Image (tube, rainbow over all chains, first blue to last red; front, side):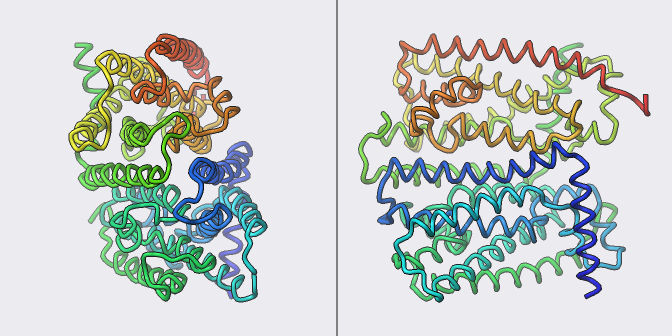
Length: 264
Length: 267
């Protein structure tokens, strides 16, 4: 309880710190929003020009970016500071965290308030409302529960991927570059049915980089579309997110134990 | 001697890249995977479609792959070298830019030139591989290739000034993180990185005509794939050149105003 109180107070202070630069604060909210809008624009352009994408109609396709963006917005809000950690490692800030009486991971998450998450979540929630309104599916309690669980699973899976990159950054700070690419891949290829891609490429985005488990498979389960993997595996996407996140945290702890710092 | 100094300034960031093997590996892998993914995506989308928005499958794939390669032209990590304007403003070291015998605007331009030449080497190597592998179509004639080269040069020149503007913004706002992110978004959307502008509604294409972003990428790539015919090339090149002149004058004005805002140790 004491830890939660400290986290809340630090978060409030971080929020006030962000408000210190008013124009930057407002621009960051706008950024979160328009960044997400770019994903919508891209998806809309493709849907308009290429109807029946991969055998999915447009209302079903919309569920994929809506799920992914909501998961991404929540990731940015709660665990997003793992992205871009390499710069802080380069500047030696991790060394400071190591001598404070608070877990390093928690201190990393409390570095600053992610103002852009406000814009991210606003647009993502709007898209989700739009996607649900256009959907012809019968939204039973079971489907709604699965959708919520899938969003949380997507959040954890994205967090796991960025935690792995952050762990690598502890050894090679320049590895942070991979995080930029990861974000780009998630934004570009995580928002529509992956069955439009050749089987090998789809396989890479499923088993090489488990991007398909963030939103594509959960959306396929909800809308009843077949995928390249067995139904049970697609349905277990949220569970995979939990397992991946737990695994990435173990990797983070191991990497932190072996962190040598700038001075060896 | 001036050439030697210019060379030393221009090679700083590329040298930093060459000393960071994980970044080099990442750039190579990222470029390869991104090209494969983008080519696969557009081929998949065109599987049941003939020509749409005036682009056939070959043109769309070529455009998308060249957009990926072109986006690597200036994507280096100055931040690691602590030589970005925002960092200098934060640490107060921006004053040193004004104490050197090299004017800050020239130093900035030389650094950018080095970065863009280094990025161009990557893009050119990627283009050669893609051309040999048949991923992209060759230009339809020598004239198209020549016009494309001129247009690409002008486009990169415009891009340089746009990026300079976001850095100059730091002299007034101290921070430019949001401005840079807005720029990246606008650049990717309005220059056709996400999808060729020809796929967008007419009002969107008209809107983009009045902004400099399409001059950076959409115009050269559209000339390359033949979506803009050679007969219209002169007009497009003139618009690009006009943006170069307008932005050059504006950024020059801002450099002068920025110099008045630089203070050392509290003034």
